[in-house]
Image (tube, rainbow, N blue to C red):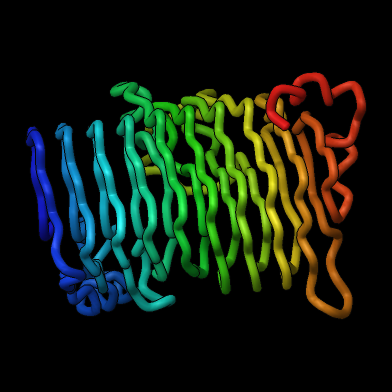
Length: 310
């Protein structure tokens, strides 16, 4: 049970004059590291099957697990929040909308031990069976740092994720700037995703889109349940001190299509740099991208599929 939990609620407001809710997660993190837990750690805030939720002007810190988790919810606004946890705190995601729709996350600062914002929609065969996507998610004016990703989709996307817009994002001292991730056995879809107006500094990998991330809840997942990834637009992204520009790797039997990159400039560290891009099983187009992207994204024949996204 989460510290703040609700199921089947309507018109909920959590707000305060930047007061603090401290989950005191240290004891949970240590039990997890020692392998002493038989159950999942609690989230700090979780609403299920609810609508009309506003969370604003509150500081959340030291969550045992994810911080804010709306699941099967609609009409959710999260704004003017600060979310804090040590960089080595496990799975302390900032905000994870999960199988939810019409969600707005804005004007917030997040510094945690895992993804700042991660859009999800169910895990393997359970998410496929329930079949509720996350859709119409807006993320804007969010700043933060994480050893993992700034803006993420996945890896639990078995119910599908679509119509996500992330814009005006600042990411620093992080593992990955933008990370779209799924896996064999997930099924579901990821489509119509737009990330724009991003600045990142001191990041290991600027952009990562992969079909080989995440584990499974059990051994009952279907290895033939392949994810469908199409229509991802990344544009107007600027980075400095970025070790690797990007990695875009689809699946052999489910290539990622319509991956559209535009006006992206990711400056590296001084000194030797590994190959800036790594791509496989992907198609799309790239315009005004530096360093130059993979050949799979630079074919003139592919530019037509991205013409409406640039």
